[in-house]
Image 1 (spheres, rainbow over the protein chains, first blue to last red):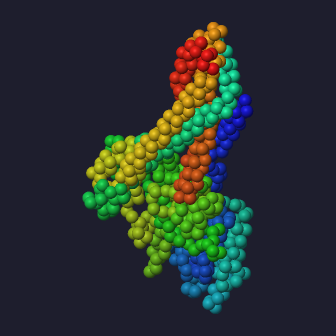
Image 2 (tube, chains in turn red, blue; image 1 turned 45 degrees about the vertical axis):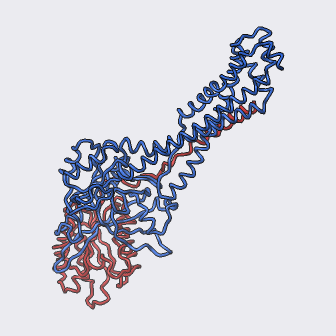
Image 3 (cartoon, chains in turn yellow, orange; image 1 turned 60 degrees about the vertical axis):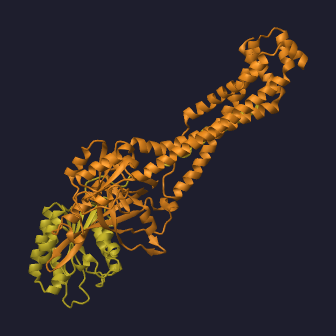
Length: 204
Length: 436
C-alpha cells in the first residue's frame, strides 16, 4: 500500500506541474485604433531645430509628436532652415498636401526677416499657406517666435501679421515671441509645451 | 479457483517476500522509466524537427532573392545571388503556380533611421542609427523562419507594433537572456525621402512610433526590426515617392526584397529550387544541412531504441528470475494447493497474476518517473536553447507513451512470468510437497 501511495503522489505531482510550460505572452495590443493622424510641420530653422545637439529627440515637433499625439500618428517635418513663407508656399506646402495632413503647424518668421520680405507680402503669403493647408482638411496652428540672435530687425510686425492671419483664417495662434532667442533645448521644450496647450483645447 | 482468489494468493505471495517484490517492481519501473523518457524525448524531437522537415514548415522554406541565379551557386545552401532582378507581383504569381509550392510569402524591407528614446547604453542616450525594417505577412508567421524569444509577434495589421531582433539587443549591450527587458519600450523610425529645395536638397523623414512587443530570431530578411508587411510597404513607398524614385537613398527598384517559398515537404525543396532557378531567380535553402540533420536524427533514433530495448530485456530477465525464485521457494505451497484440488491452470493463474500485478505497478511508477526525467531533460535543453536565442521545446504528456508504458510493462511481465508460472503449474503435488 505505501508503494501505491508513493506512486499516486508522483503521478499527482507530475500532472500538477504539467500545466506551467506555457511561455505565451500577454503583451496588450499597442494603441492602434482610430482615424489616422498625420502631422506636418511647415517652417524654418526654428522648426528644424538647427541649434539643438539632438534635433531628432529635442526639437519641438518631435516632442509634440511623441508626447501629445497618439502612437499611431505620423510626423513629417518639412521645415528647412532659412525658409521664407514664399519658399514654403512653393516647396513645403505642396509636399504637405500630398500627405493628407490632419494637423499642420506653420512657424515661419526668421527667414522672411532675414530676407527683408515686406510685412504685407509676408502676411499675404502666410495666409495662402494657412488656407491651402486648411482646405486639405488639416487643423492648422500658426506660430510666431523671437528674433534670431543675429538679426537686428524687430520681428514684432511679422508676429502681428501672423496673428492677424490666424484671426482671419480661424486658426489657433501660438505666441512664442517670449522664448529665448537662442531656441536651445529649453526653448524647444517651451515651444512644445505651448503647442500642446493649444492642442489641448481640442485634442486630435 | 476464481480470479479474485488468484489475486489474493498472488498478493500473499508478494507480502511473504516484500523485498524481492520491491526489487522486481523497481526493475520494471526502471525499464519503463528509461523507455518512457527516451520515447518522450524522441517524440518531442520528432515533433520539433522531423515533422517540420516532413510536412513543410519554415525548414522546408526557400528564400528567393531579387536577383538572377549565379550558375556556380545553384547547389549551395547559401547561394550567392547574381545580378539584381526585380521581384514583382507577376514573378510572385508565377512562382506560386509552380508544382509542389505550398505558399509564397513576400518580404519587403526598408532602410530607416531609428531612435530609441528611452534606451541608454552605458548611461548615454542611444544615438540614432540606420537599420532595416523587415516586413512579412504575419498572418502566416508559422510558415516563416521566425522564433519568438520574448513577448509576442506584432499584430498582423498593426501600425504601432514591432518585434526586435538580437541585433537590436546587441546594440543596447543586452544579452539574449535580457530580451524581455526591451518588451514594452518604444522606438521611432523615419523612412527618408529626398526633397530638392531650390539649389539645396533635403531628406525628410516620415516618422512613426512603435511599441516593442517581442524579441525574435528571424531569417526572413536582413534587419533588426520585424513589422507587418504594410508598415514596411508604406515606409518603402515613402522613400520611393521622392522625385528621384528613392535612388539617392539607394532604394532597390524591386517591389519585393525577397520571397519565402514553402515547398510541399522537405523532399520537394530541391525540385522547387530548380524550378525557381529556371524562372530566373536566385534561391537559398538549408537542404544540405537538413539532409545531414535527418541522417543524424535517424541514427539517434536507432540508438535510443536499442537502449530502450536493452532496458526491456533486462527488466524481463529480472521478472523471470524473481518468479523462478518464487516458484522454488513456494514449492510446498504449490504442492498443498494441488493436494487440496487446485488444478495446473489455477497455479498458472496465480503466478501470472502476480507477474502482471508487479509489472503493472512497475509500469505505473516507471512511466511517471520517466516522464519526470524527460521533463528534467527538457528543462536543461530549454536552458541551452534560450542561451542560444532559440525557442524552447514544449513537453506535453504523450498519452500513447504513457498508456504504452503501463500496458507494455504489464504485458512484458506477463510474458516474462509465463515460464516460471508454467513450471509451477506442471509441478507434481507429491514432488512439490516432498521437495520442500
